Image (tube, rainbow, N blue to C red; front, side, top):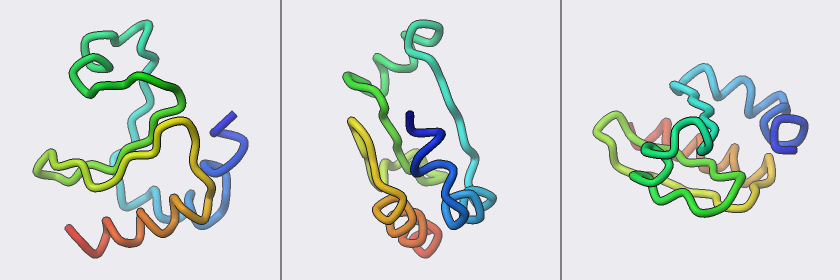
Length: 77
């Protein structure tokens, strides 16, 4: 499970303070999942304040990949 893997890594947790983190269940929020094009779980996305998708990970992500993308997104503002 992603929460016990990449999302629990110390650097990911540290960087997550710079983001608005949202977890949704497509069964409960199907309209949002459909709008975002969620087709597989897990689906992790980094979206700018302007609503632009900066990075998407569909089907899983390693802590190293996620940290790299988060650091890049923080620099992208």
